[in-house]
Length: 315
Image 1 (cartoon, rainbow, N blue to C red):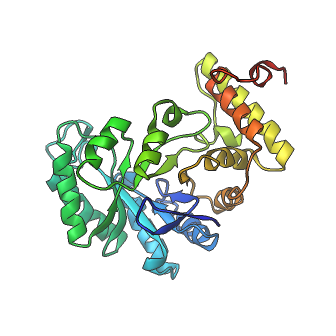
Image 2 (tube, rainbow, N blue to C red):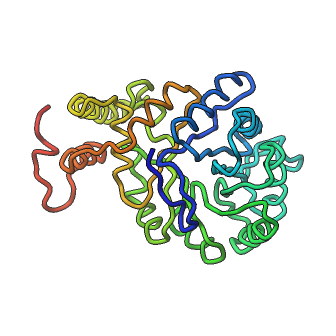
Image 3 (cartoon, helix red, strand yellow):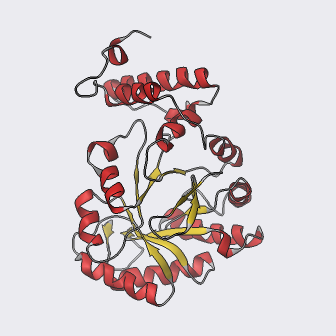
């Protein structure tokens, strides 16, 4: 396993993180096994949220770490709050977002209890709340850090401008966002550049685009989108064959080759899938191959100086 620094904290985290969205009581044995297997393979970074499986994810993760004999100081636990589904809070009848100081503090207390821990290493607002000033959100985190309940702060699904607004009041270590060969928004909107500027890691959810890039998911419903996705998957398969990797490993390697501490977030509770992903760490594509995948994924040549064959040659 390779390790990168978590933002500017000095804390080292694994080059892959385990996303715990699918951990449930219904499949608790498999869920716990995936956590223990991930740790045995070198993953020390685990991400969850209060809304994942209605809180079960946090409970199962905490139990898996304790019953697996994994020392608390040997792992980095990240969680989130801010998404409010109907029924979570009596006054909310619709899905909403809440990053008020009171809501964040209450959310952290509940997460600590479910995780059965005294502190959370990294806490992230799950999505932007347009009705709360970033200074209030930051003040809540300052209080939680002073109390020792939260050690570091990140954000999830924020835009570059939203990152800048909150980072004016509190140090941010991580941005969590969707990023893969089939979702290039972090490159196209300046999100990755913003993270590099702020010395933040980018934690990438759905790095294999719900399994599509691993050859296991369903293509998009619209014809043009399905055609684009199939073209990318076909090229990923060609390079997987060339390098002797799996499709999923090839897609992960493409992401991890980006500079600045880009960390794929594995969204699986299957221990075998975790092991396959860990084998992608350290793999590197040739520069031409990396850019060929980029060109096919974006659906048009790179501006100025792009060799035409990378986009037009028949395969």
